[in-house]
Amino acid sequence: MTSARGARPTRTPQPARGAERPAFATLRAAPAALVTAGVAAVHLAPAMLAVAGFAAARATPAMLSAAGLAAARATPAVLSAAGLAAARIAPAVLAAAGLTLSGPGCKSERAAATAAPPPVAIDPTPVNALVPAELKSRLVFERRELATLRAAHQATYALAAPSGWAQTSKHFAHLRPAGATAAVPRFEIGTNCDGTCTAKPWDAIADRVHFAPLARGKIVQDERGPGRRTMIADIERAGAPVTEVVVAWWTDGDPRYHVCTAVLDPALKPAAPAFARACQAVAITGDD
Image 1 (tube, rainbow, N blue to C red):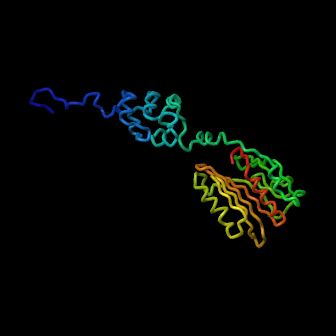
Image 2: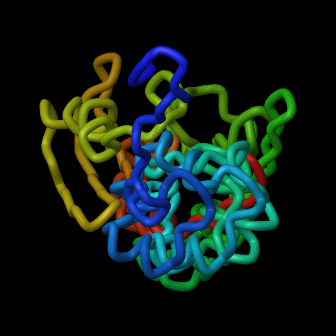
Image 3: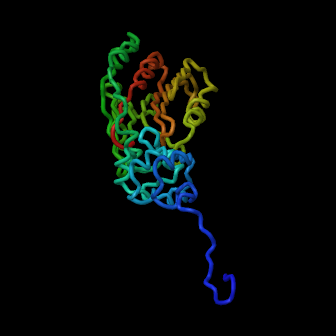
């Protein structure tokens, strides 16, 4: 555009450098400017992060901190909301700012979440105390470790379990009295994903799969607690009376829940509280 023939072109006036939109265009944005602009992590769109330089290693820890990405506040959910996938921000920057490298669902995050579970004490003494006197000669609980191997998955379940009962398969932590051919009695520990192994409402799923079906029988005990439920019920299976013990426990956000069950014939029915107590303490190692 010209003002007259032969005159020099005139340029449209540009805003002064300090008038750039909250200084996001370059890394010249000082921490104070970021704070003034209200750049909290959850408010930053991925595109804004990119033009602000957070996708490159040039972003300083001070800028990350000013943007609300202090380690104490930068949870995986916040990082995800801010668009900070590990592949889009340099590891060195994350490390300098005290941030984790993994995003939600990454192996490293799952490992961190499960790396240090609270220790589980396995003590058969209180379990054996619940075995009625008339059964003490045939039912003694001891600390046992049940190893399982399914494809590349190996796990070990440590708990108080009946002495002399045999594991029926290396693939599952299932026990029956040695030499028994009948399906009852049995004692089993394992996991359930209810389909794909992703986070689900385990309380509701455990109720549908394990507890609700026992409601047609006689409920002897039904105790609920945070992330755990215990039930003892008398019910008929294949026309025969049995007593079932079910203990399920879970952690919200986990991809599966755990369950410990016992199916007892009338002779072992009085020992149901002992089996329920044994199921309260199960130490799990490996990949179950």
